[in-house]
Length: 115
Image 1 (cartoon, rainbow, N blue to C red):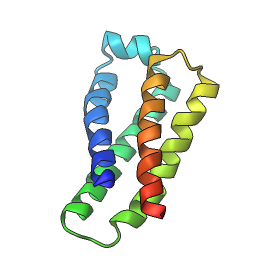
Image 2: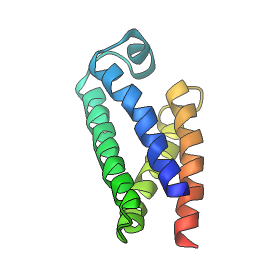
Image 3: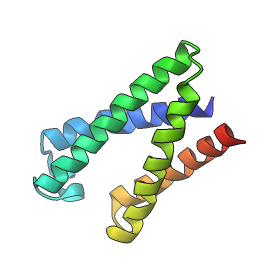
């Protein structure tokens, strides 16, 4: 159940953020800065996480045994980059703050898969 919620969180957040970054909305410029190659790399990373989340959610829904194993690869990467963003960007940034909340939930999900 936690795995499903984690993947749905990814889809909900990234389903809003990815198109907004792509369209270069004022809110995304404020949060992520103006268009740069670095921002486009972050966008590509977000699209990859969105895609993997769709696949994992589909695997969970169809009872595939490998869904948990797939989550054991994507969740630690997400937790690490989200937590590290507090040090590289700073904890006052709203994207970082949202990342830390999501990372905490994903950490609970990860622990539930391991133990």
